[in-house]
Length: 386
Image (cartoon, rainbow, N blue to C red; front, top):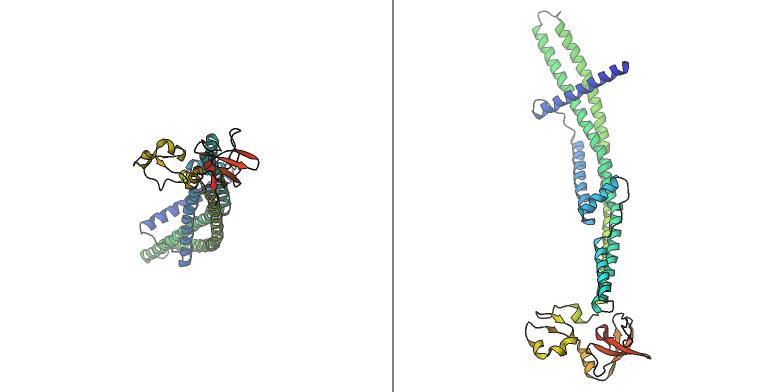
């Protein structure tokens, strides 16, 4: 029974305190009550903390968008994080593109120039995908996690203490208002009852003033104590900035590593593709029309080649010279090639073989010779040496 009485009394006291704060807050908004202003230093710290929180949230969210553009994937990762479970590994966009290129190149044939190039591009895209995955993991650990810890940890504590300070300030101002009203009532009662000083009203209001003064001292002490606690927490924002600066440096370093890797991967790929015959690499210098392999040039004829808007025919001039002569030349192999039958010669990239023309042979083939081995080789896989 005593416990129930205590709970009822506590509930009534809490309700009274809440009502008192609500009245004080409303009167302040209406300009009917005075408000205790915080000192300038504390106000500056509060503003700095709020600014830090707002920009940290924006930077964190936009970094997440940068690292994971897919909103559905971000939501899935958020749910798994809240459930304290590891999100399932998924293939990223560069890896998926790389796999498509490799599959297409395999379908077209690794022995063809286009198929071989697709495979090489696909392998590079998959390397970029791996680098992208490493960037996300490193950035999440060294940059996003510290920012999130501040928002969900340190700032929540600051916000809690700030709210408590606001309540203590309302209690203080409510106590000041009650004391001011009690003194005014005491003065008025003293004037009305000056003719009969034995009246009870003077004693009642005197007791009320004494009680209000005591309450004011208590609320002032609690407010000062809470203001000091809040100030100490807010002064830690400078340390937070220093920590976030180190995290930012880690993020920049992770990005620098990522872009350097991508640049190197693409540079290597460019070197591999740079030795392709010009008719396979670019159409920038060609007129409007559809480019076709130079093997078809003899069938089209010179009139079709000269007419505007017609098929554009290109052919490496050094290979043309070789086909028109009976001399043999050294040639470097550009790409691996697997012989389709016994009449062809398998090739390895970067090896040097001897090539020559044979009368009656198809225009896009030459005869290749490596030691005692001999067979047809596709001219698009060769680069004649001086």
